[in-house]
Image 1 (cartoon, one colour):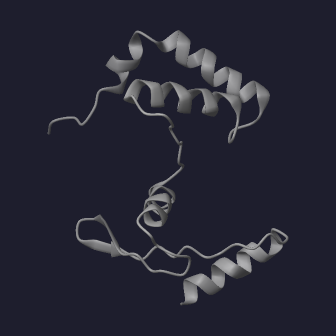
Image 2: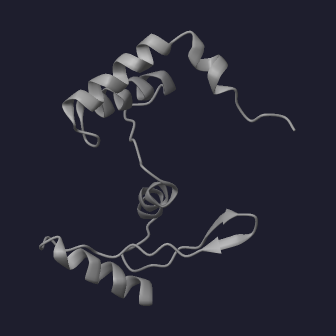
Length: 113
């Protein structure tokens, strides 16, 4: 089997930098929407030669902005091949600006459609 990536070899030369960054994030206790993420977005965008970079947490979260960019609307059911010919049906419910307690109900309804 050919390994996909050798992270140990790639990280060996920057271990101190990685450890320092991880400890900074853990120390401030903010794991999302925090300064380290914003800095990474800016640096990665510059590396890629684009104006903006966006950190996204998962595959479905990455599909949503692409879906919207292609003209998709809330309530559409875009199909995406996830892996090995398994089709997934992401549903993007419209989340109103109400209390977080309602979010579970909205998601539950969206999953039933």
